Length: 464
Ligand code: GDP
Image (cartoon, rainbow, N blue to C red; front, side, top):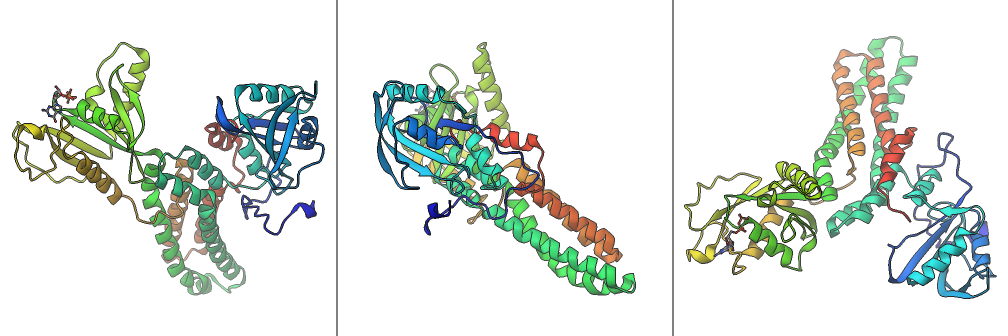
């Protein structure tokens, strides 16, 4: 409805390139509902409902006059079965197509007690053509309606999962379509180059003319494109680290104080996100937020044998992670002769129990007993990890699928460049086509098979 669209409507989720197309599956006619806030008692909860029956639901809940689009309206919700009140709530209505899912969508902010949730769930369960949403189903509908491309969906998932400021910021960049815009610019360049080469192929008197004309001009532009793609591939590792977190392993001889250090950090409130216990008493991993960088610190002393199958699995995973650590902190007992200090980019030698040897250490020295040097240690870890992270991590996919697509595009562009001196325009055009195809897969416009979609949406929680 055109009159539903304000000038300031800000249909901010619309993804310019992702218009619905023939290849996308039919939109489901079911109306789906789910809470977007976690289960359990809370001051406020948000119930999302999307689909054609949204108006009926509001009506059934006693909202006789449809609230104005995108305006908060206070409503007294009642149970249609007996007219008894359920709650006072804020109702937000987003008529199709200017909604997250592209369908009629309503968000109800209500008091988050279990009693209110039960009553609402009971009403919804008894309404025809309504069903609870599956995990990620709102986002899946947004994708199918062309509101979000695959890169944006991946960014959205990462934003919800991000535990630190910098991880969240990079995810938001991707949700807002930076990757898609970059990919579109690359695709346009590829398309332009191909069109020129193919036009010359059609009209040139002989192949030598093509070589002198379009192919000759393509060289510098292809090199520029290659450099940009190469930069994106090189930043992929950093983007993945921001998304999945850096791993820092604490190693050293028995009794040097590894567990003490991890315990000490786990006990400090400032930096800790979560901790995972190895034994009933000690954590083997703690997640830290170091200057916005997500870091998992692993106590290798905690990686011992155990009979508990759940603990075994945790230890197996931690061991695997520690093996690929981004940084190893090797603790040395202050009373031992420190080993020769070798400067190694992913190795930090730290003296522990400095309280026992009141020396002026030339190297980083801490005491888990007194807490001396711990802040310096955290700063040193952050500085080491920061070094690997470009200051401006721009439009780079952070998921393996997106990164593979950029690598394939780079490979094809390199092949095209290699084919230039062969003066084989058909070969060059073919490689450019392959590069464009790889990029199209990245944004989801290349007719992705269903399993790609399922893989992306599988990790979404209910209500997203
Ligand atoms: P791990 O085997 O490397 O995990 O070492 P632990 O963390 O279990 O520590 C071994 C022993 O060293 C324990 O008795 C700790 O209390 C002690 N310890 C750890 N850090 C310090 C420290 O900074 N100063 C002193 N004096 N003792 C420490």
